[in-house]
Length: 214
Image 1 (cartoon, rainbow, N blue to C red):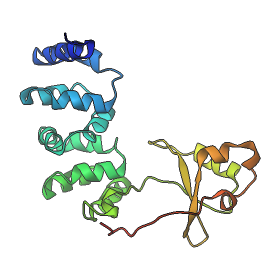
Image 2: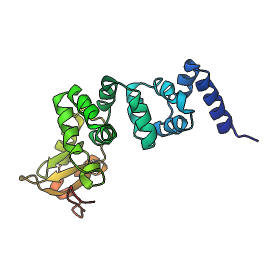
Image 3: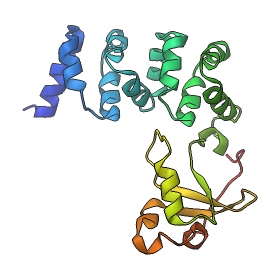
Image 4: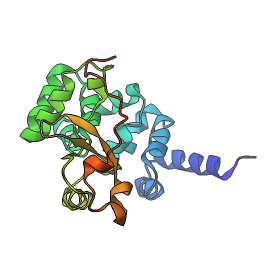
């Protein structure tokens, strides 16, 4: 006997096949991007692009990072450079670099030229690294603060940032921008730590690699 999840999945696939997009959008609303990616991967190939079009830009960007490379490439082939650039703007730089790395050089360059200068430069820097190196999987989205700042000052600074991704910790650096360690946000939130410097609170048992490390 089929369980409820199997029945719902079958109903959703039927709605996609029949192009009942209102029902499809309702079913996908609030669903985790990884679950939507699973649905796309199990949807008949000829219906995938139509299903993908039902998602807003932010959700499309999140779903692409969850898809198998072959299906991601298939969906990107159906999009214009303008549409891809809109998705890049919703992505973290490392995810954007991974996605553009799936395109041919000419198409990737066209998309990069459509981005604003700052976003384009960030992604170009990451694309310069080989795919399977530390540089190829790193991100430029992080916060690094002077070890002389207090936790309270750091929290005020972080609170004023327009962050696209959750922030769990901040790196701590010296006056020469050398890495001293990191501090987790929850540690800075403690009242007893608000006046302590990040240098005092930093975890210094850190592991680092060069950008060209496999």
